[in-house]
Image 1 (cartoon, rainbow, N blue to C red):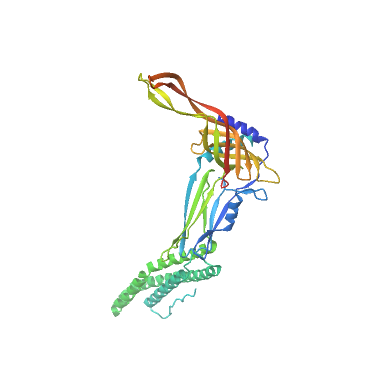
Image 2: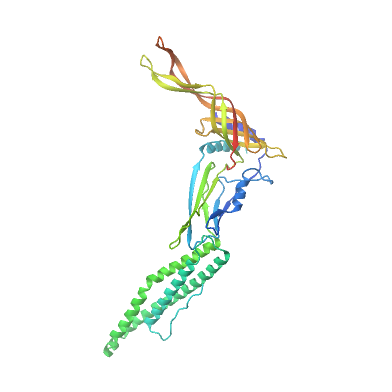
Length: 435
């Protein structure tokens, strides 16, 4: 029976005019760190979100659907002292997905200054290495000072420029230190080779032990600086990378999601080592993924005359397993989700419109299906009238059993049968423009 609904709708849409175009390309949100240590969404996203509340003057609507890439970028954020943590949560509206699949079938049928390195030409090898190590620690102090100069979440353009200058100079000095370390390694190696070659002569003159001790001291001193140098190299590169990130901003891409998914992205700053964790500085971004078709989502109450009958299994006086009616009503009211394709709206007043509509129950999608026409009133309310299809359970092989003389009789059934039936319904619903 569902296929009949899809076929009828497809034939209706084949001659219906196209709805207003929707913009569904990549959407970019900007998280702007303010001087009050709070993160706030860029106003551009709020404008886009506001446009979802109804058609804009150009006849376009902004929406996020399964084809849309959502990118969250940052601006003026202090990545030297903090990191950004992203958490994505999703909640699927099953009723929306069921209706979207029906519509997809229908449409498919129809259509800082650094100290220089101090090395002297006449200095001994040990002294050269010692001076190199002292300069190494001074650069470390300079780096720590640059990293601790700015502790707020946001950075001004002037502050970013100052940090960029410091990062470039520290990186240049690191390159110089790397070259000078390679030179010192070569000198230590050459000294070892010289001692090996001149060992006999130096031993005769009694100078070998003294010179070897000087060589060993220089070798061990250079080896002791290996780990600090590696740590400094990693720290300088991380600092330069953080400055570049602060300058250009971060970009976090949220994966595409199916229609009917409500996505929540939490963006939380996390303090790096030595920084104080910010208080109340997180932000949350919520958006819903719409159908790729130009549909309007609304939800509300629908009443129908299909009725509802519930049975329970009981034992008769004769010991047979039979069925008894526990609940019976000639009408029924349900909370429903509705997706409508609007095919007409007054040219001079877009607060009103008429649409073909499909619907289903919110709490049990697919058990009942609704199809009809919806009238949009004042851009917010919808009145819908049409047909509803649902499975109705009825008893077969009735048996009238006398309980007792005073208690009368009761009607039992030997079997149950379920049929899908059609009837009329009327609904009142409200637009949910997030989709």
